[in-house]
Image (cartoon, rainbow, N blue to C red; front, side, top):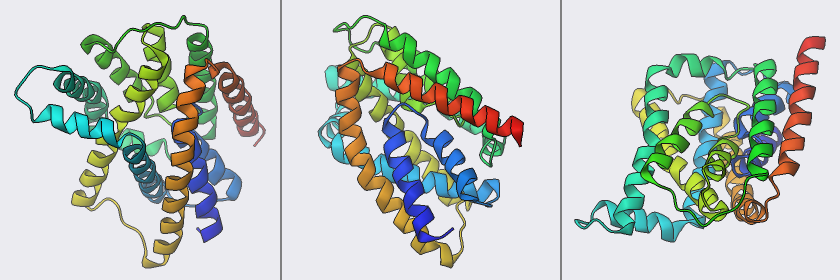
Length: 264
């Protein structure tokens, strides 16, 4: 992988992590178009690094909220801060369980499974279309809602299903306020990404050649910067009920991916 390719993939990751179009799916499509020949393990390593970059951009955007979460964890009173912290923890459980029990199976999906990506993008399109038609309310995220949204996040571990699209759509369909849905969606993934990276580092799973350090660093920076821009943009779009545009986009790209696979 050269530097230009890494930057392109980093920008794609930064934009699509927050926009509801599946960052993992677009990375797999981009790798196929760019002729990336990485084996699944190497491909997953680069994907994890880029996700780490967008997790950092999330921390920058929501630094006040993150501080509140940590504050809530170490308080000994049952207030709004501690309740929100518990909801974040509850939302993580489904993805943690799936990640631990089916890690090898999930890794096998990252390596040019374009047909799968296309099908999952169409599923994402349907979710976004349903969410866009849902009525807006001022409802908060409940503890039960947090678990249900967490299940959506676990399913979105498949490439092609947008994590933000699935979790935000689920939140909106549950009647939760759109802005609060986006905020919860972006915050709930941060602990998972850092946990995944810590696990892979301690387990020695994130291995790459010294010659890959510069391309990976370039991709990391590109993902971080583009992620900062996309995060703020997405919050505004969700508030204005503009998800149908992304639904059309996902349907078109998903169809192209399926047709491309069938023809080749």
